[in-house]
Image: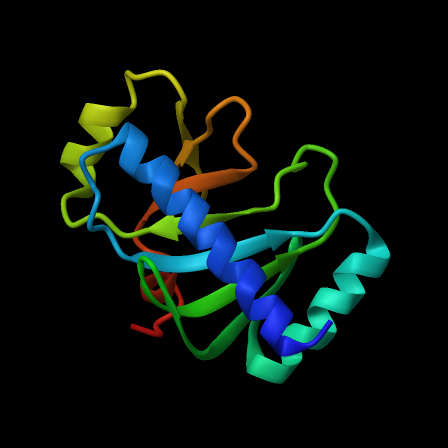
Length: 154
């Protein structure tokens, strides 16, 4: 896969996730913080990694894949600087996800969590709100603190 194809795939994921965000929240201007491509096979994972190495460098090795800091990529939700390539996972059949930064996370959380499609995921050093819609081939997330801040890249 060449880098042009990879970039278009990432832009499509961010565009679709922004549409998901806009259909279900009032955070229409929330900028993208990072995006993730869900690979569906080991061969696809290796192909995506090869292309991602051409546009950025690995900043973190996670148990679920590699996170790259990439040259800023213009998207409908702002410049994207972090891209994760996720190892194949049968629980992630979608194309990928995008994570958006909301200015008032506490208020956003109180407003959205009671509604259908939203779920809170708590981790050791952060939490995130997941948004899924039946039939949608992407997911949207809202992390606190945002990933770039967690990694000291902001």
